[in-house]
Image 1 (tube, rainbow, N blue to C red):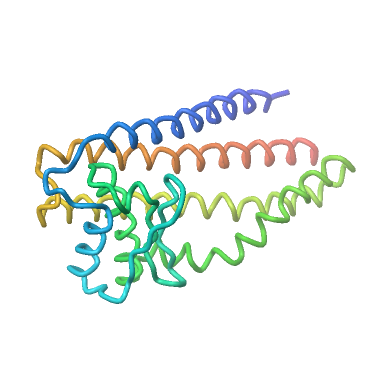
Image 2: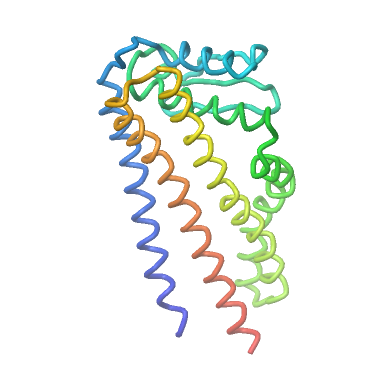
Length: 226
């Protein structure tokens, strides 16, 4: 059928997603072995960047795992994985400052972050029901149910697309501060860029896979309505 080519595109996108995950892990490990010349730990870099932006009340906490780093906008806390929190590597300060970038976005009400926060409750509900609606609709041939599933799934895809500028903006903020405030040298910026760009690829890949799946569902839906 005319939409069969979508399966090939989705498979390619899925392979790209796996490659992106492999690359971010490999890049992080590579630059985790390279100490930054300032000798800053991830925790120290995060604390310094928070304080320099007036975010004295935002704590930095260690969490278990690898690449489990995140900023919690509800608790207003930066959580860093133990390898990032304690280590003095290029990877550690890069990831730590990226997460602080989200805290700064929160402070200045960065529009795309505000939009993502407002979307989250709806997306959390919709993404939970979308697979069941689509599956039931296809099994029982209920195209109206499929259509509803597509609407719900569209919300999840929109959320991933909104996430892209949020992540890129946080990385840009991190790099600017790291260079301007001397966390890293100009020579070290290359390593920082590689770590942050590898991480960004995972979000791009996830959004691409989701978007292609949505298009496939829409094509199946429209073909069965004709």
